Amino acid sequence: MNRHLISAGDLSQDDALLILDTAEELASTAERPMKKLPTLRGRTVVNLFYEDSTRTRISFEAAAKRLSADVINFSAKGSSVAKGESLKDTALTLEAMGADAVVIRHSASGAPHRLAGWVQGSVVNAGDGAHEHPTQALLDAFTMRRRLGRLDGLRVTIVGDVLHSRVARSNVLLLSTLGADVTLVAPPTLLPVAVGTWPCSVAYDLDAALPKADVVMMLRVQQERMNAAYFPSVREYSRRYGLDVARMGLLPDHSIVMHPGPMNRGVEIAAEVADSARSTIVEQVANGVSVRMAVLYLLLGGASETGGQR
Amino acid sequence: MHAADRTDASTDAPTRAPTNAPTRAPQRDAPPRDPPQRAAAQQSPAQRDAARRAESETRAVLEPDEIRRALTRVAHEILERTNGGDDVVLLGIPTRGVPLARRLAERLEQVEGRPLPAGSLDVTMYRDDLRLRPARALGHTEVPAEGIDDKIVVLVDDVLYSGRTVRAALDALGDLGRPRAVQLAVLVDRGHRELPIRADYVGKNLPTSQRETVRVLLTEVDGQDAVLLGATADAAGAAGTPGTPDAAGAAGREGS
Image 1 (spheres, rainbow over the protein chains, first blue to last red):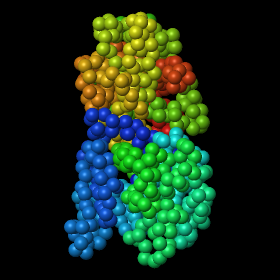
Image 2 (cartoon, helix red, strand yellow):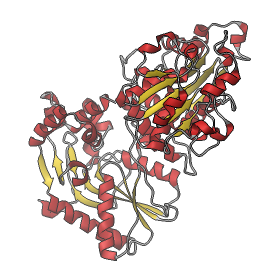
Image 3 (cartoon, rainbow over the protein chains, first blue to last red):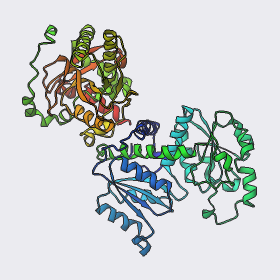
Image 4 (cartoon, one colour):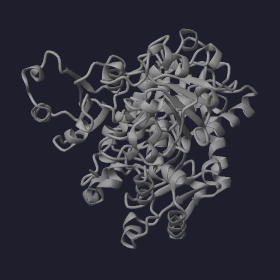
């Protein structure tokens, strides 16, 4: 495996399966009274969050703590960043403190990539702008494999605001590596220009796509990133691309409904659907800890390969 | 030679160990017991060929029948020492400790006429040599439903060498519960302990040099039963054959 986890596209099939298999074993430790493992004792993991996040930050923090690593949480609010410190200077500070891994979330695409050039430790991308969120894709794949038993040949439909979604890009890259068939469904305005180069197919009609889907993943409409009118009204978007009970009826019986969170109930997903037995939304959160434990263990647990990649 | 099974007490030679150790650091830090387990799952055909070539330089020190008899004897010893196997839980250490634990459990059941719980205990996350090698895949831990609290846990492994795996297993057990007692059963004790640990049940004491490799093959994992005493790590290394357990294991892990 690479020393950093920046893009889901950097993972080979073997890497990805190793992470999922490791997560599977680690998930069982969450069920025992003693949840902690001593593996990363004495290692320091810094959570460097320039963007708001509850789920991901807590998940990484829990994962690192269960592996006995020391965790330093850093959020842009209330730090020197508010005084104008640059990413590089912050990185050098972390470096001087001896961080073995930096988990970074940043609003700018490519920030983790830049950071990787400045620090000795491993860099884990916890979401950069509209670029990637590889651990989310890994936990989604993990959840699919647990629920449906396989990934190869699985038909996954990702619906919604693909343009602003780092989750969609990471999922497309990872799932295609793992042999799944991914279809993106979105209004044309919410698809990135280069979507034709992605390893997936594209459709515009949700009702036609649903009967063929083993997995349907709903994406949040990221209004905070929208600086133009991408669709006429939320109501119209919801009617054409939202997953309500009637639409859920079009899905095959075994299909599952996923959402990376946070949800806008009533917009992309109806409350009844989010709380239904098909929904894996709560499971995804629990699986996130196991998957992030696996990533931290595989990046930090062994000897760092000298002259490693990147 | 094999007939000496029971009485062979000549393994007590750990003090000789450190003299030539520094030049062979990888082998000393990591008993070769572990790497071949990974290798079996991940070997490429080329590596398997190489392993086969290396095997031709090795000799079998235990034949299938001898392994069977040794396990039967160990099973009886366990019954003697634990008052008929009351409260015994067998936990195999992956990879090859697991089928051994299962075989012992079958024999105990044949003798006592009631099933004994057997499971597996992965110790990877508790090893002290994790930072010496790239992170490795985890084995499976499966504790029988009755748990281990107040039980007599018999740890089962294929080869006892430095004792570090067993130390890790003791730590792992501590996180799972509080057994009344912990005992250790191994198929082969090859000496060269680096920690104050000894086995309660030994299938075969096998005096070795640290330059030699010991490989246990089991039908469940390798398709055949055998204990092989290998060519020295040196000879295989010099020939550039990735066939020694160490080299094959490392090569197997590189891809992951």
